[in-house]
Amino acid sequence: TQLLEQSPQFLSIQEGENLTVYCNSSSVFSSLQWYRQEPGEGPVLLVTVVTGGEVKKLKRLTFQFGDARKDSSLHITAAQPGDTGLYLCARGNFNKFYFGSGTKLNVKP
Amino acid sequence: SQTIHQWPATLVQPVGSPLSLECTVEGTSNPNLYWYRQAAGRGLQLLFYSVGIGQISSEVPQNLSASRPQDRQFILSSKKLLLSDSGFYLCAWIPLAGGSYEQYFGPGTRLTVT
Image (cartoon, rainbow over all chains, first blue to last red):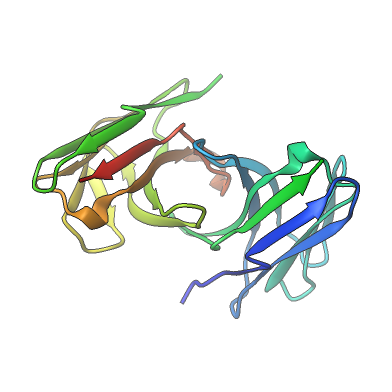
């Protein structure tokens, strides 16, 4: 199957803390995307990782693609209330896309 | 620049009634188009995708159908809604050229079946 598992399912932290969320699969990805979604809105693309071992940074967000291209992580440094949302990973396979179940992040001020 | 529209934004429909949700994309040609459904706070389930006018692929058998009457228009329909059809429906597109896997989503339609 094309199952993507995300962990943790829920995360509630204080402003200023660091956190890491994970996206894992038993299959190899050709690429993987991370999205952030706010309640009542569509997901917004954050980053695409393609190469095994790749690390991409987007301000306080660091995305890593595993060497074997079966897993990925998103690390947020010094989280802010504006980081609150549902973080989704997704993989593409030809014309189809498969999403993980998401990590719901709440950053308390 | 490209934009994607969905309407209506919210909809409350009784069980057994028909459904029509519309999605249009501006500023691009020949995109791949997608319909997803999302349960509250959860991931997205791919329902249908289309690589061109009149070309529809169904991912999940159910009482929904999709059509693409024009290049940048994608419609999700049902003849008789079920309670289980409630959810947040999202339309998305990707540029056909370049092999991109980066999807761009519309604002969504919140459907409640009562």
